[in-house]
Image (cartoon, protein in one colour):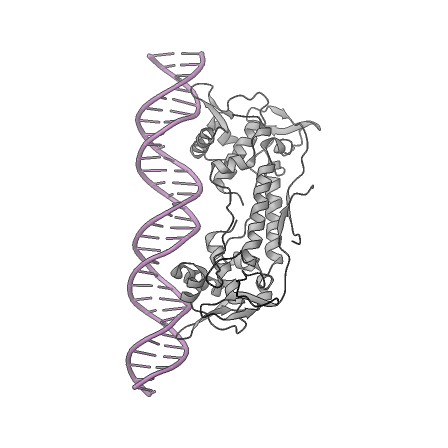
Length: 170
Length: 170
DNA sequence: CTCAAATAGGACATTATTATGTTTTTATTC
DNA sequence: GAATAAAAACATAATAATGTCCTATTTGAG
């Protein structure tokens, strides 16, 4: 579903979104915590900064942080920056010499694609904040489970519904 | 959503499924009608024949045809043969040193992936047969709109529901 | 019956894209 | 000015998407 690159990007952004201090996080630390190749992640973050999704700071104590609030960054914006939003499929099966509408096969996939894109537009980083894995040594409800490399724990604001595919008549 | 290869394969299979005679269709004709590079399509059909989805016949008047009834070929089987069924994502965000469950991000995508796979398992080629583009010069209801290179028209059996993504609470 | 034409099978080569690694430069802080 | 970290340019590897060419079958014509 997600390309490798998009997955890496979202992992990093979710991680950054969990920092209430909104401080700078270095590529090396992110890569270590998220299990992503460091130099590739650097390139991805660079791209995201060109798209004003994150912002960067060079030099000592530099790194990356979100350029906006987690509630203002849609999954759609992220995948868009990475050229990873699926396009509506075109159906190449021609009838009578001209293309009139999508065939049954492509209608189905087009329908899925559109609703997938709608999901990407409806969901922001902020919607993902409270659903991280909860270790045994986890703080109680209302607390987030993500622990950084140095053991800090971030609070968790709210609970959001999940998305699911469903088969519907049309 | 679909990889190029999978899309090519499904186009060809849908096309083959429309032939009530169940005769052999040559790669060149399929490629022409479906707008797919001929030699690549040949390789894909070869692969599908190894997986007993189509069967082939060499020599003059040879070609490919479905190895089973359209109702017996699931989209899942096709994508499986092409190594194109998505796998459940693994969430690499570790809490407390061990992975306990998927984070909110990956829970969402895992949910979508699972239901997408369910759709692939539920849908057969036969379910797609009656929804082809209908040209102005099309036969009435109950008739299929797909016209071959030599202008033949195939009958259409029934109408099936489409699939759509929906956002549900979990 | 034989041979030529047609057509898939299979091996290999090529190109494009994605995913990565390396190195040098530039900005920042101490 | 020395250490640190991103920026940028480049190189590499892996995979997906094709193209080419030769081989093996099958059919039909003579």
